[in-house]
Structure formats: C-alpha cells, structure tokens
Picture 1 (cartoon, rainbow, N blue to C red):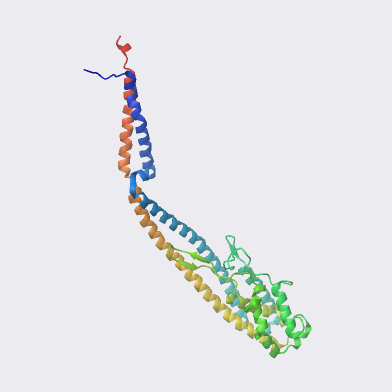
Picture 2: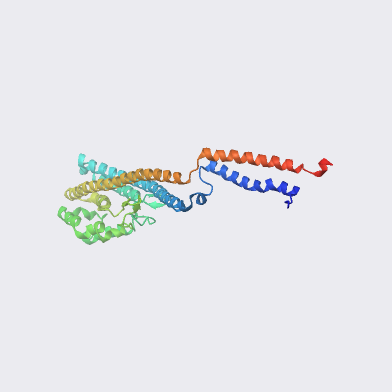
Length: 347
C-alpha cells in the first residue's frame, strides 16, 4: 500500500494557484460588461473573426466618406452663397439699366457702378473655405483671379487692345470721336472678345477648368465645385470691364448707347448662365444628402451584424462576474483557514 505525500505548503498553494486564473477571468468579464463586446474577439469567434474584420472595415469606409461629405456640403453651401451674391449684384445692375435709361443718370454712374461690381466679382471668385479657393477648380491652392488694376496683365491687355483699335487710350478726350459703328465693330471683334472668351482669359484667371470630383458614396463620384473659367464669369468680367474701362463717360451719346446695349445683352446671358451653375451645384448638394441617408442605413445594418458577432450577453457576463467574485472570496477564506492548520495548534 502506498500513500500520497501531502504537505501543509501544498494545501496553502492549491487555492492560491487557481486564484490567478479566476482574477484574470473576472477582469475579462468586467471588461465585457463595460464595453458590451467580447474581451478577446478572435478567441470567441474563431474562424468567424474575418467576417467581423470585414464588417468593421466597411463601417470605417462609410464613416470616412460621410465625414468627407461634410466638407463637400460646406464647400457647396459657401459656393452657392457666393454665386447668389454674384447673381444678385449682376441683376441689380442690369435692372437699374433697364428701369431707367443709364444715360439719363449719367455715364459716370454706369462706369463707377461697374467698377465696384467688377471688384466685388473678383472678391467673390477669390473666396476660400478650409484653406481652399472655391472657384479654382482642382487648382485649389492658387488664387483664381488677378485683380484688375493698373499694371495687371488683364488691364494691360485691355489697354493695348483699345489702343490698337482706336490709336488712343480710354482716358483720352478724343474718345468722343469714336463712332457708334466703330465701337460696335470693336466690341464684336474677335480681338477684344478673345481677352475674355479665348486664350486672353489666362491674363485674368489661373483657375483650372477641371472641377473637383468627390466620392460621395461607395459607388458615386460627382463634380462638387465650379470654377472661375465658367462662361458666366467671363461674361460678367467682360460686361463690367466694358462699362468701367472703355471711356464711356467721354463718348458721344450714340456710342454710349452701343456700349450700354452690349452690357445689357451680356448681363442677361450671364445671369441665366449663373442660374444653370447654381442648379448643377444644387443637384450635387441633393445627391450628397441622399448618399448620406443611404449610408446611414448601411451603417445601422453593419452595426447590427457586428453586434450579432461580437456583443456579449450582459446578463450572462454579470452572472459570471458574480460567480467569480464568490469563488475568489471563498478562495481567500479557504486559504486563511488552511494557514491555521499546524501541528503546533494541537500540541
């Protein structure tokens, strides 16, 4: 017959050895109660772990797109406000010319108002949001429009074209001798119009013709900006330049009328063109909102899928915590009792 050797030390260490594991299990259970998620997802899910990772990656992609759409919506909103200002200014100027013949108010008023409007147009086209110029197309770090001032490329080009056509500067008193027919030929000529409609526009603008395209959902990419090279902006710049810098105040009445008629015609076209731009941006804004709504639904579905895989049962986790707590307390109590076992107590 053989007996197993049992020592007091073995008895003391027995509950203490189990205590470490129980404490680790208790910490894990408490973490699951706090987070509502398995403490070790990979261990719990096994081969289903890849499915959980895939769902979380999809969720992160949706989050990133929705966050980006916030910036897109802000840019669209600020751009639409600028376009409202540009169109309102143009319509006010046009209506003032239509409601009361400009020449009855004085050609100086026509000139001075146009100069103010041109500066306002350039200011709006040079607006920025979030460190990006709104009307620069994809060239968002470059100011789109140069100021129309003495010595600027755009001003020099207009001065040179006027001098080439009439042999005098706009401020020369001899502009009074320019006939209505001569002015009409000049305004309709290719050379002058090329300053705004052709290659000459590069003296005004450094904007890109390519608008910003944004990924607004996992499957959609749309244009979400406009640029200073749009026909509407060129027309407005042309109309205000004609009114403010071709010497209208010093010209005879018939020549002034030719200029005024041309301005009215251009402004009418430009305001309609701006409405078209606003409609496109409004459509983009609507598509961004619809995309966000769809992605919000997708996120909820994904969250439910992740929850089914990774969420713990709070009641079950609480039961485990209570059981482990009881076991640990019993282990402490048993250890204390075992420590009192000694032959000395019985001698």
